[in-house]
Amino acid sequence: MRLGGACRVTAVAVLAIVLEGSACACSPHVPDMAPSPAFSGIWAQQCDQALANASLSSFQRKILSTHWVTDAQYQEAQNGFVMCMADRGWVVVLANGGGGTTTSAAGAHQGLTDAQSMEVYHQDRATCDEEFTSWVAPLYEQSKNNPQGLTFGQQLRACYEARGVPDGAGLSDDAFQAMATDPNYHASSPEGVLCWWDPTGSEGMTVQQAMLADAQRVRETGPESSSVQTAP
Image 1 (cartoon, rainbow, N blue to C red):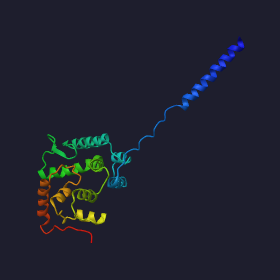
Image 2 (cartoon, one colour; image 1 turned 60 degrees about the vertical axis):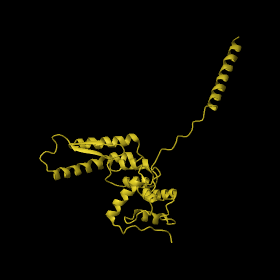
Image 3 (cartoon, one colour; image 1 turned 45 degrees about the vertical axis):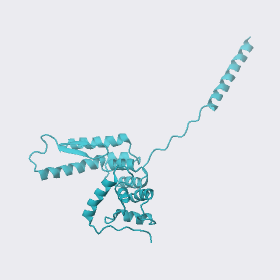
Image 4 (cartoon, rainbow, N blue to C red; image 1 turned 30 degrees about the vertical axis):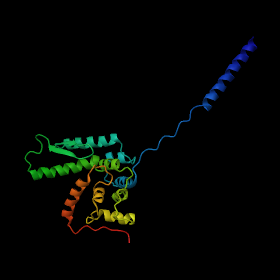
C-alpha cells in the first residue's frame, strides 16, 4: 500500500509538470507594442532645432525630448502660460486651435499709459511664451493640420496637381518652393489662388474668400507682381 501511494504521488507530480509545460507552450503570443508617434518632415527638423537651443526651458525640453506633443501635454503648456500671465496681472482666454484674448486684471498695471501697458504686456507674454509654449504649442497645432510635415511648397504642389493648376509645372521641389514663397508670386487662376491660401482645405476657405484675400495681397505687393514660373 505504501509503495502504491508513492507511485500515485509521483504520477500526480509528473502530470502537474506536463500540464504546466503545456500551459507555457500554449500561452498566447503578445504582439509587439506599436511604435511611439513622432514628428515628421519639417516638424521633426523644428523639434531638433528647439532641442539644440541651449535657452529652451526645462518644461518644454522635457516634452519635446520625446519628439512628440500629446493632447495632455499641450493642455498643460497652455494652462502654464495662462497661469504665468495671471501671475503678472493678465487675464488670458485661449481659443480652440490657437489665439485668444488678453485683458489687464482689475487693479493691475494702474498708473501706466497705454504705451507702457502694451510694452509690459509684450515683455510678460514673451517671458511666459518662452517658458511654456513657444515651441510646444506651434509644433502641436501645425502638426495636427499637416501630420506629414510637408513644406508649404509640397502642400501647394499637391493642391495644384489635384485641381489642374499648371503653375510651376516641371519645376524642382526647391524651385517650386522658391516660387510659392516669393512675395511677388500670385497664382494664375482662381483655383490656384484658393490652393495658395488654403492648400490642405483645413481653413475651409471658398474661392471667393481666397480671391478677396489675394486682392488685398496684390494691393500690398503691387499690381506688377504676377509672374508664374514653369520649367524650361
